[in-house]
Length: 86
Image (cartoon, rainbow, N blue to C red; front, side, top):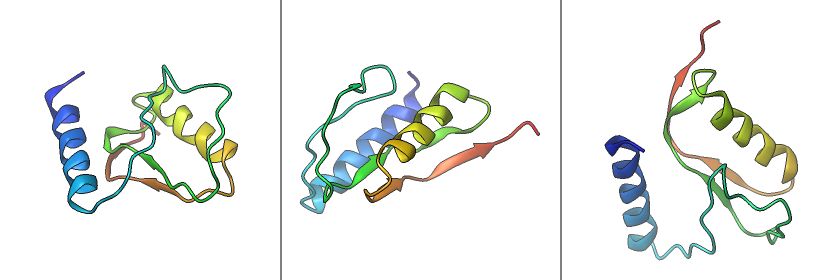
Protein backbone atom coordinates (compact mmCIF):
# COMPACT_ATOMS: atom_id res chain seq x y z
CA UNK A 1 0.00 0.00 0.00
CA UNK A 2 2.98 2.30 -0.35
CA UNK A 3 5.00 3.47 -3.32
CA UNK A 4 8.12 1.60 -2.20
CA UNK A 5 6.29 -1.73 -2.24
CA UNK A 6 4.83 -0.94 -5.66
CA UNK A 7 8.30 -0.19 -7.03
CA UNK A 8 9.71 -3.40 -5.57
CA UNK A 9 6.88 -5.34 -7.24
CA UNK A 10 7.44 -3.58 -10.57
CA UNK A 11 11.17 -4.34 -10.42
CA UNK A 12 10.44 -7.98 -9.64
CA UNK A 13 8.00 -8.24 -12.54
CA UNK A 14 10.60 -6.70 -14.88
CA UNK A 15 13.20 -9.21 -13.67
CA UNK A 16 10.84 -12.10 -14.33
CA UNK A 17 9.96 -10.79 -17.81
CA UNK A 18 13.60 -10.08 -18.75
CA UNK A 19 14.62 -13.57 -17.68
CA UNK A 20 11.63 -15.38 -19.24
CA UNK A 21 10.42 -16.62 -15.86
CA UNK A 22 6.84 -17.79 -16.04
CA UNK A 23 4.61 -16.67 -13.17
CA UNK A 24 1.75 -19.11 -12.59
CA UNK A 25 -0.01 -17.29 -9.76
CA UNK A 26 0.11 -14.21 -7.57
CA UNK A 27 -1.26 -14.13 -4.05
CA UNK A 28 -0.85 -12.22 -0.82
CA UNK A 29 -1.49 -13.06 2.80
CA UNK A 30 -5.14 -12.04 2.44
CA UNK A 31 -6.07 -14.05 -0.65
CA UNK A 32 -3.70 -17.04 -0.45
CA UNK A 33 -5.97 -20.10 -0.92
CA UNK A 34 -6.35 -22.53 1.95
CA UNK A 35 -6.56 -25.36 -0.57
CA UNK A 36 -3.90 -24.95 -3.24
CA UNK A 37 -1.84 -27.56 -5.00
CA UNK A 38 1.56 -26.22 -6.02
CA UNK A 39 3.61 -28.55 -8.18
CA UNK A 40 6.78 -29.60 -6.36
CA UNK A 41 9.00 -28.21 -9.14
CA UNK A 42 7.40 -24.76 -8.84
CA UNK A 43 9.56 -22.22 -7.05
CA UNK A 44 7.65 -20.12 -4.56
CA UNK A 45 8.81 -16.49 -4.46
CA UNK A 46 7.99 -14.33 -1.47
CA UNK A 47 8.15 -10.63 -2.22
CA UNK A 48 10.73 -8.34 -0.71
CA UNK A 49 10.11 -5.14 1.18
CA UNK A 50 10.34 -3.80 4.67
CA UNK A 51 8.26 -6.31 6.56
CA UNK A 52 10.67 -9.01 7.73
CA UNK A 53 10.61 -9.31 11.51
CA UNK A 54 8.12 -8.38 14.17
CA UNK A 55 7.15 -4.89 13.04
CA UNK A 56 4.47 -6.40 10.75
CA UNK A 57 3.80 -9.75 12.42
CA UNK A 58 1.06 -10.85 9.98
CA UNK A 59 3.53 -10.71 7.07
CA UNK A 60 6.21 -12.60 8.96
CA UNK A 61 3.76 -15.26 10.15
CA UNK A 62 2.54 -15.68 6.56
CA UNK A 63 6.08 -16.39 5.32
CA UNK A 64 6.64 -18.88 8.13
CA UNK A 65 3.32 -20.60 7.32
CA UNK A 66 4.24 -20.92 3.63
CA UNK A 67 7.59 -22.50 4.52
CA UNK A 68 5.92 -24.94 6.92
CA UNK A 69 3.19 -25.79 4.42
CA UNK A 70 5.56 -26.44 1.49
CA UNK A 71 8.67 -28.00 3.05
CA UNK A 72 9.75 -29.77 -0.17
CA UNK A 73 9.54 -26.72 -2.43
CA UNK A 74 12.27 -24.26 -3.26
CA UNK A 75 11.27 -20.97 -1.64
CA UNK A 76 12.98 -17.70 -2.47
CA UNK A 77 12.55 -14.75 -0.12
CA UNK A 78 13.48 -11.58 -1.99
CA UNK A 79 15.56 -8.91 -0.22
CA UNK A 80 14.01 -7.53 2.91
CA UNK A 81 14.53 -4.83 5.45
CA UNK A 82 14.69 -6.67 8.77
CA UNK A 83 13.47 -5.23 12.07
CA UNK A 84 13.09 -7.05 15.37
CA UNK A 85 12.10 -5.15 18.50
CA UNK A 86 13.86 -7.66 20.76
